[in-house]
Length: 214
Image 1 (cartoon, rainbow, N blue to C red):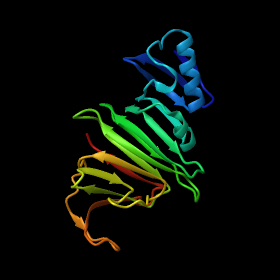
Image 2: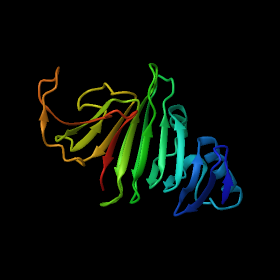
Image 3: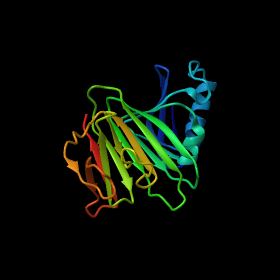
Image 4: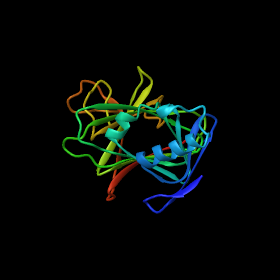
């Protein structure tokens, strides 16, 4: 199915293997719901009920959503397979947990700049393949960002130090293992022990990009 949306891009979607695939075009949550409703009316989504159908963004597709929309989506994991998911902040006191599965095509997760009263987003990243294309994590409005590896839990946190509840900005991410191979201890002010930590800087750009190889 193909249609032109208010962004001027042609949307194309399909329903495959129990997933609702965004094939091309720019989607927001309203246009996503409209596309799902049309597919359901046409009988293409018999295995997907309501918001429980997993969404996968393929190469050439963009999905934009605010923190409030993500908090109310309640659809389980989003899937990224070469596409782009853009997450916008919202004024909120809530903490939203969002699982995102990374498929073979990799893709881009982009987080816009926060404001003073932004809610918090915790993203649980799951790498579904032993090998995948590069995943880019883009943090708008940041001059720097960090990742810290916790060897006791065998997990890496982005924007959140192990044992801390203070998020750098409005979003933090969790990944299994040590994908950036962080091995050098870094002494941090206010912490009794060094952390296994790596930092990235904007270097004059309006954002910081962390690239996660497959």
